[in-house]
Image (cartoon, rainbow, N blue to C red; front, top):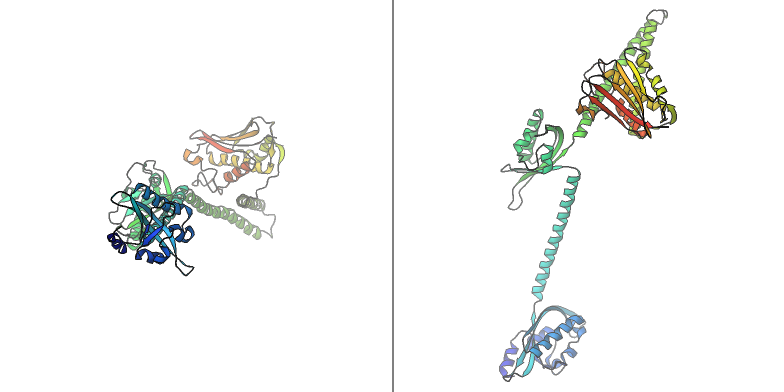
Length: 500
């Protein structure tokens, strides 16, 4: 090796010159940069084996990395070609202390051959890439944090999507500037549109019932301009099916993010069942107050007259006033019992006292109030020997309610047929009238709480609880209840209870 080589070595990056002895890799010399990087002196290195001076434990390298360094130097000697080892972590000891400096070095092994092609030495050059690695690690950390946040956001969005889907909510989006309106397929379905059809904001507004349309549009505009939350309940009619539904819509304006646009978005939910229940409940309260007021007024009038006659008990009016008072008391008791029964059903305190009894005998007894008046003819058909197992008092309530309904609602029909059939293991009891019948759109509502088929007729008094209570009684027995009706031909209400 000539002097020019050593001159180059003095100004090169950290480098150490090793003999081509694969077994020892004897250190020939090292440049100042190497001595500084490894905190060593030249006299501590010269003539010694590389791995005696830098044993595995002092390098802070696991065996696998030490082997890769040896393999790199060996390959350079055997092939007489430059070999480069990817950056690795080195815990370099600080001489005279118990401390280590952690560095990341990229190592290159350069074989030096003479003009004859004989190997003279191998130069191990170290490039310190610690700053690059630190930057890379920081960048990777930032990317990992960003990825974790992205995953967390995706999970939140997924949970929100599942919540929206499970609640059968629709969603919508509106560009504040262009007023471009983008509804979800669920929202389209609520408004009666096909999923593939275009539904503009104007088309959505057109489906709102006229009496609510103006207040809804004004609320939307106020939310858009003043950034206030939007929350409304209103009825709509389906675009194709013309079905009226109640919906609850909520929304909010969201300001533009970086290079984005301000938008107005929110959710919409079908609340038809809840709204109809509220309407029925409010109607019920109105009807209940009226139904209770009528017998109470009559009772009060009777008692006032009786009070005036207390000194003349033989008056001709006395028996009539007593009968009228009793009828008023019976009416009030019936209404109160209905309310108590609903309370027991709601609180799951509806108990049954079961026994075996004849259903035909029960029918004969419970219909006396109708046959005695003589306005209707009751016919009993079917197997009159059937015996059932149930709460006789409760089944009596069901029968009385069905017969009373036939009398009240079957205007102009003076014939009522009761039928007993065996459908093992159940008995089926039917009450058929030949009145005007019930429209199909009412049939699925009849057995719901507070529902009344006809609230316009003055003779159809009651709280609208009879069929609801009857339904719960039948269900408690493990049976079913239903109705078959055809306009102009009458209705047949039926229920089943277990055979004895």
